[in-house]
Amino acid sequence: MPANDRQPKYKRILLKLSGEALQGEGGFGIDPSVLDRMALEIGQLVGIGVQVGIVIGGGNLFRGAALSAAGLDRVTGDHMGMLATVMNALAMRDALERSNINTRVMSSIPMDGVVEHYDHRRAMRYLNGGDVVIFSAGTGNPFFTTDSAACLRGIEVDADVVLKATKVDGIYDKDPVKHPDAVKFESLTYDDVLERKLGVMDLTAICLVRDQQMPVRVFNMNKSGALLNTVVGGEEGTLVSGVVND
Ligand SMILES: Nc1ncnc2c1ncn2[C@@H]1O[C@H](COP(=O)(O)OP(=O)(O)OP(=O)(O)O)[C@@H](O)[C@H]1O
Ligand SMILES: O=c1ccn([C@@H]2O[C@H](COP(=O)(O)O)[C@@H](O)[C@H]2O)c(=O)[nH]1
Image (cartoon, rainbow, N blue to C red; front, side):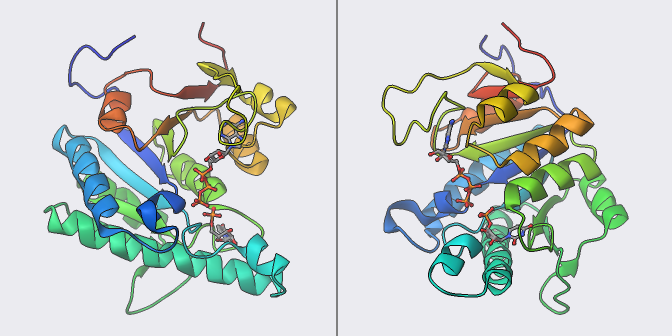
């Protein structure tokens, strides 16, 4: 069903941005033009009064599992991955502030003088005051992912929904990047995702949102206007919740 007006459906969202999406055509690092486009789209949400928390991945720079496969100690690799998310957060804050959007970066790992340490009550004050808050450094613990961090922070700040922005336009019965014949779901229950082991999000994250009944929508960030459409109630991508909406 298309969104019929510009009134937000959600008061507060937790937006998970894929680190890989920031690399643009370059294949590594951060493409400033991608940041600017995302800042514009996030600004549209702030403009209609939506409170926005963000978690950004680190896959454009480092992933602990990949570093470990190349011979590094896994915990060291995960620390590098979490630091990568701080770099992405700083770059995103820069783009948002150039668009005149007040933005705070908080880190799960103390980094005095660079970014604020994560503090739940302070984060709530910033969100209530209309600042965008970027939660960086994942959960602060190795062996987790930023999907888990996004779900955790989304639950902690009492977001209405976790929006996972990615490069595919929803959840399929198998990875659509590898399988052109993959079939898309409009909606799924948490148990569907777990039982079918659908790889778009890690299963720890799905268990967390299932236990707290936090809805998650997976949609394509490369589709212009999809983020705003989602927030005003458009049915972009795939919704994961406690019920199937057919
Ligand atoms: N069943 C599935 N449905 C949809 N996508 C799937 C599925 N299985 C695997 N994928 C893959 O999951 C990817 C989504 O992961 P994405 O890159 O957004 O997250 P991430 O790994 O958390 O981010 P980062 O790039 O920051 O590490 C898609 O690009 C898609 O190729
Ligand atoms: O809580 C966390 C979150 C992330 N990591 C490490 O960071 C990288 C990048 O995150 P992605 O979710 O893959 O984008 C991840 O591969 C882990 O190595 C972590 O250790 N703990």
